[in-house]
Amino acid sequence: MKPLLVLCVVCTLVVLCVSMTAEQKLKNCNDVRAAYSSKGFNVNDVPNKGVNGAPLKVCPQGFSCCTVEMEEKLSQQSHTEIKAPVSRLSTNLQSTFRQRHDHFDKFFRELLKNAELSLHNMFVRTYGMMYVQNAELFKNFFEALTRYYVSGGAAVNLDTMLSDFWADLLERMFRLVNVQYEFSDAYMECVSRHTEQLQPFGDVPRKLRIQLTRAFVAARTFVKGLTLMPDVVNKVSTVSASPSCVRAAMKMLYCPYCSGQVALKPCQNYCLNVLRGCLANQADLDTEWNNFLDAMLSLAERLEGPFNFESVMDPIDVKISEAIMNMQENSMQVSQKVFQGCGQPKPSVAFRSKRSIKDTGFNGRFRPYSPDARPTTAAGTSLDRLTTDVKKKLKHAKKFWSTLPETVCAGERIEAGDECWNGTAKSRYESVVIANGLANQGLNPDVEVDITKPDTVIRSQIAALKEMTSWLKAAHSGNDISVSDNDEETSGDEESGSGCDSPPCDDIYFSTPPNPGKPQVPVLAKDRSNGGVASQGGMALALCGLALALLAPHLR
Image 1 (cartoon, rainbow, N blue to C red):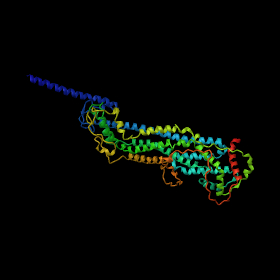
Image 2: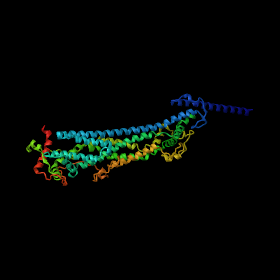
Image 3: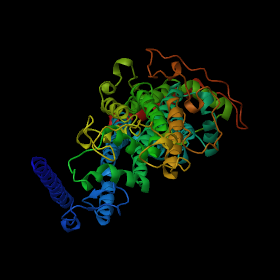
Image 4: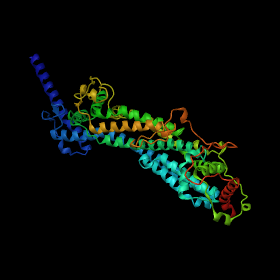
């Protein structure tokens, strides 16, 4: 009798246990209902009791608090949630480099405007009306520099523009220092043709051409690089997740809901495999992205040193004034060579009738540029601060694409240790973490990836990064290859194209010795004009003419 009684008690306890377990399972769906509605979904989608999960397409098909309709909605939600952290990181990166682009671009443009204003103010004080009457020459000079900065060689041939500027300046100054003569347009064309031979401005034009070319190529190419970065990130961020990625994300993020474990988070390695599968194409950007960033960092160092845009533009008024001084100092020799080559000009009747030689006793000179007078704005300037800041940001952006899975699968999004969701249950994740990149995803246990079909958008951005890197490397040597290379013209000397290796790329500053030597002016081939050499009296008149020009503002 006793054994029978014991058996009855045992059976009763088993029935009660099973009943309590079932009741507990039914109650678990209440947690799901609360969690599901917190996502903004209709709580009525969730069954009050556990249902057969056989119809489910992604999650385990045993006892389930999910329906097919819930699974579809949670799949969409998982797509949004897996994309959100990547989008946020991408948006932050875009914003960072858009701001840096705007800072650099604004700085370079303002530096150009300030340099033009500085030259204008200095020349008005120094030359008065003589400058004002010729101000359009310098205005056009700065406008051309600005167009080159904005559009490069496609808009302005820098070598040609600079040659034309110096030829035009020579023509105007030649008339001033030889005011006692009359010159026809044909005669002045002869003078302009021999500008490089005459070297009336000393070595300033050659050095300034090298400095301007290197600084402008470096500045505009660096700004173009800052423009490309957010553009690449933006285009890559438009790449949609594949259906298999969405399926894997749903399984990782919301299948725990279906078993009533709403607080259960995925294992870290499980998360890494899902994200590496979903971001397989993006990871392939990493190599060219890092090459591009290295090239940007190298060019930033050039901007801080020998290609410093600010150190070129700040004292450009002084440099051009030094060139004018050189012409003034050597006006006699220059005029003699011109008269030998282009012919003896006719005396000006108007000059003789205006003023006698005794009225022209002013022998002033423009103050030469010395190392002590060099502008001190290059040390600790805004450009230095900008480059220091942007270099930190560029270094931080390295490996951005390959580390996205690690960045996303961290913190509160995952569960460390073994008490985590492994895709089927609350247990250790046993699979090996797959390496980054499309080619490695054929072995991914959690995301089906077609490794034979690279994403076309991402491949086009890889090509864009490669091209920009080649431009940056060329700019690092002072060469601009960002426009079509149909223009084969070069000036023929060793600085053509402003290419350089390390020693020639040292900064070039202009220093005038106390008694500058006279430049060697080659004899010009004589044009078919009246021959003759200027007399000593003519040279005296030439200097008097220049003195008048310089004295004019002081006499008013």
